[in-house]
Amino acid sequence: MSMSAGELSAILPLLIPALGACLLPLAALDKDQETVKWVRGAMFFMALFCLAGGFFYVTRLWATGAQPSYGALHMDRIGQYAGIFVMVAAALAVLQLWDHLHQEGWVKGETLSLLLFSVVGMILFASAGNLILLFLGLELLSVPLYALTATVRLRARAFEGGMKYFLTGAVAASCFLMGSVLLYGVTSSLDLAVIGRALGAPRPDPLALAGAALVLMGFLFKISAVPFHQWTPDVYEAAPHPISGFMSVATKGVAVLAFMRVLGAGVPAPGSLRIQSALAVVAMATLILGNLAALAQTNIKRMLAYSSISHAGYILLGLVAGTPAAYSGVLFYLLAYLAMNMGAFGILTALGLVGDRTTFDQVKGLGWKRPDLAIAVTLCMLSLAGIPPLAGFYGKYMIFKELILQGHVSMAVVGVLASLVSVYYYLRLPVALFLEKPSEKAEREAAERPAIKAPLAGAALLVCGVLVVAMGLFPGTVYKVFALRVVENAFHFVR
Image (cartoon, rainbow, N blue to C red; front, side, top):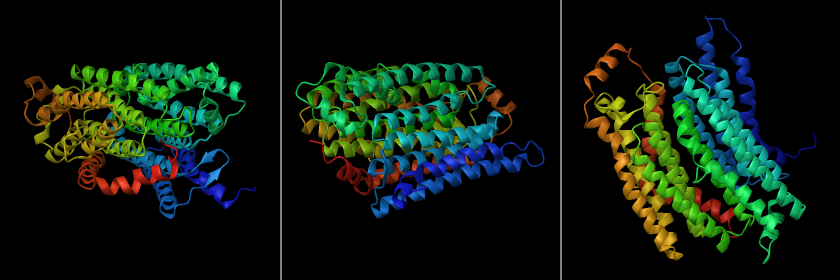
């Protein structure tokens, strides 16, 4: 009752989607067949309305320069960036879910409620200033995603993927929690700044280093970095297409932002040799394994899953460089990755590829039926490969440039070679869409199936294509308005 206006403004970006998440299941209780269609539309509108309300409130904070806090919850530039990032990704996912869930025949209000709860957890995770809030955010974003992976219970593979994600996620959360316990036991504090000072000492306690390593494992799991990546292909393949896209973008993005906040508190300092060496080894392994494994995939979702792993490597390279410009490059790259990957997964729903029909054989020749969608996803795939002048090229360029300036030439060379390798598997989708003909069996099956329309998913895909081109044509504007402003306000400590 004694909460000030500033404290209220710090938690409103969490309260708005949380309110929607609580109301949506109530809207889904009506089982009257005459009103069920109206109720379904109202549920999706309510979800979009809550996301839009949270988005506009956070952008207002961004525009005014306000950075309110409530205890250890800091709605500063990092938290605001996370809010904008996650709510845009969630809105694109909701648009795609409307069509996808109707295609699957499984339209449930709890799906949208779980998605909004995950949004709340993601913003909390990126805005947390101590270990307790960090862990609460981690669990609040993760538990709904376990259920969302298995949300379409008509498919056996969905249950299998949900269980795999739950079990591996539980192990990662346990490591994170054990690391937090060790850090608290050594430092007698939960505050990240206090822990950072203890770890930044010339001779830090070995138990504190062990705790920091366990916490790092939790972050690497969410980023899908090697060797904590094994869950990614199976989970992405099992989940509904829009949920796979949302997980690949939002989970990775907020994990990177939260990790950058932890680095900013000095756990340990980003310029230290200790953290650079660890991240460099993980980044190299992630780049190599992700790209090589993607080459062998015949399923589009599994290919995109290994692609997501490889992009975690590019992001980690920016953290290895550890300069303000490198951090800005990472933030720009996350925005580009949002548009690229949501578009890449969106083509599956936009073309009506329901369930397990996600192989390259299933999309052969479909580009000529919907050339607008095929061109949009081609732009997304070329941007993922780093082809200029699209957004992905500039994100990689900023990171590679800083690596070279900091003397990490060999890592930059590996990153460039990995990008060249990725061109092959990224071009497989446009080639299948435009240059390959479907088999006679596939044509017969397509003729027997009723025509599927996905107008909202198609619109979301077109938006992603436009964003990829716009960010490529005006990278400086996006860089200054978003990435650079976060670094200037939150990462002044970077050496």
